[in-house]
Image 1: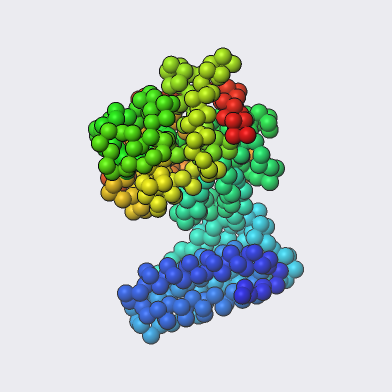
Image 2: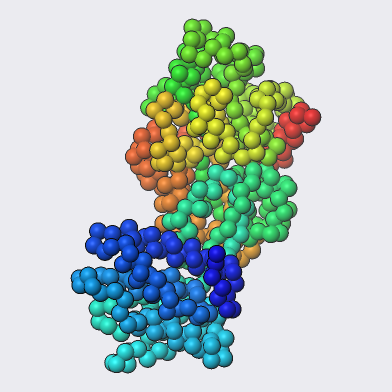
Length: 473
């Protein structure tokens, strides 16, 4: 049960308790070799108690951690929690100011230029402002950096980016820059067509066409493309061997998936058990790549873009005549699948957990495979291939408010966020960084994407997607 703190919302109390638990776990892990666990938790409890009833809560976990680390660093194991340090006294002075009638808040702290504080016998003067270091009185005591009050920013994003935004390292970098991002997942086409964007500060679909639709609807010219990922086909070694014999997959340092040959097989209804000498997967069902739902998801729309280019004699589809020409072939690729998920997370998780029985071929983002390899979820028989041609899914953020614009700038310009994006499998423009991460995870990736085609124009892609959607009915 959460503690009740006068003048502090229940949500703020819960956030503080979560921060305190995580901080305590971190302290126990860091100090366990030299300090008993009960001594660490006792020191945390005693330091936290000093702030009981104080209305300024934003900095409490930070101050408690610094206090405990300083106190338990003493070589004398009998030392527990001595008298409050200057950092504690500083925070208490701020709290007393608010209680005296000034009603100081976390936000007003950030607006004040300097709050002068007399600290220690030497009369050292320090100040607490957003992001300014508080200097404790003792010469050996560590400096305490008080983080800026955070601004909550809400976004709706493609599901493949959820793990990035919930990564504690990403959360910390954003917090260091004064923001806390709350995100909700949705299919990229859903974001552009059915999601009420009035409740969000930014929209972050997985493609330029979806972003352009949002820009048109909201009369916004600004956009950010901090990272991208090509469409890939994930399969298994026995399936790859079968399709290598059939001429669909071409092995090499980086395996490729011949979309022209694949469309020939799919278009004529060839089944797995029709393949010569197939004893590893003799299943009486059509050879089809599993995708998401093209009516809602970007990865399916990108897959459709590739297939439409190949079906249109290796030419980008333009105009009603070309649309009518390719629609029968495209429709067949999707209708024969049966149920399809709304977001790319669904079929990829099936691929990782259910084996090749239900999902021998899956359309994914390259980033998903590279990220899963970093998590130890890729098994030895799993194979990543690149369709030829492929398309690059450019994850494009559209800011809907000023705070949303700040997120776009941070994701684009902050070196640490760019490194973390690469750690999650995304391409950020730093090819060496991305290929190094992939190599560490034993994932053969295409360093330079050569056979890449553009997606159709926004209106054409919409017509093709609507044509496929109508076929479902």
